[in-house]
Image (cartoon, rainbow, N blue to C red; front, side, top):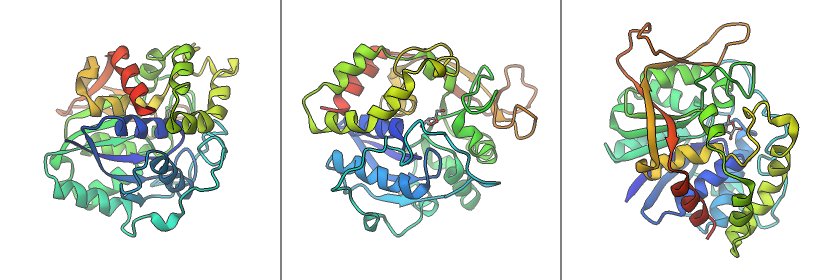
Length: 317
Ligand code: BDR
């Protein structure tokens, strides 16, 4: 079994990523920790429980984490994921927050990794606040991880939240800084530009959502709003001219589920800009060794999109 721990700010693409992992019978999700980001952390918790209900996996423990970044206040992602983070398509039978674990997300991350040393892949698809707090509480945590998979940052200084910053890093630059500098474990980054270049055609999306299953119907319902947003011409410049379907968070998850999905990477030391008029939150890729860091992250460049499509299809079967 592949053991995953998943830290999310559950908007629609986080939901897609969770469902992708659950679509693979060899994956065991040991817990899902929630963080502010695409919506409030309370909504994130509700959304994760709804996704687990749709997948009949409510036995997976869900933990509430940080409600804001380490410094300052949460930034808004706008209305892309809907106000509730899942396309404002409520569900009368949604599970209540009484199903949440009483333990907080940071302590759960530390405990679960400690109970499974060397075995857990941690997948983070939201702002990195919980992960940063966890390594401050337990500096030995990264050394016990099998791998860390992050959706966040950018490689060409092209932002989707400010001129130069990608949303998950912009939402908590200090946390991203701590994680990129203090998690000295095999680290895989799925950055903003890469996800745009790895878009899928909308025809695939139609076939994906058109599957005759409760999961596909659930996804069609929660995805409707952001699908319409994505197709707006105004978004195309931010998405580097992409006119297709990008499930941002699903690439990091797919890599954790099956590393052979990644076919080409760059390996460089990385960090995050913390100041600057336009550059706060921008990822720094140190191609020339100026940072004098020995730890290098693997930055995803090319992936097997046919394999990705199969995993996405299996998620909604
Ligand atoms: C990231 O921002 C969020 O809105 C998405 O869920 C994804 O994690 C992309 O920049």
